[in-house]
Length: 146
Image (cartoon, rainbow, N blue to C red; front, side, top):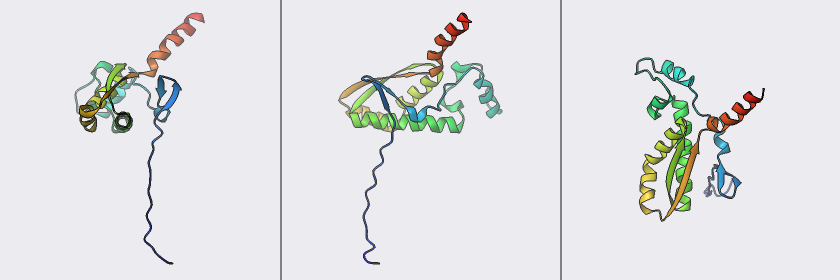
């Protein structure tokens, strides 16, 4: 069969962002990552019967999440950190909502990001917004119109 010593170069480019406007990028790969709702606290409590009970969404942190949700968040955080590394920027995170707060905290505590921030020359602001918060106003208007 000839020479069996072949070399292959494999490049992995994750499709993380979609540019919606000149200064707005969305993450369609994580469209299924929907923010926590108040009734999700009961589901989280059932998943951890031997631990302290959660009273509301403000008490939820990364340690109280299900392994599947935590894995999805870690994938998002890793992708955002890689993007910031590629751009050479140090991010400032802002969060609106309970799940956004968890994601921003996870990015702030991500070990490779801590090393990157020491050498980054640029700065970027990253705003995490729970999608339920931007839908609330529209639904309220539709409800009042009915």
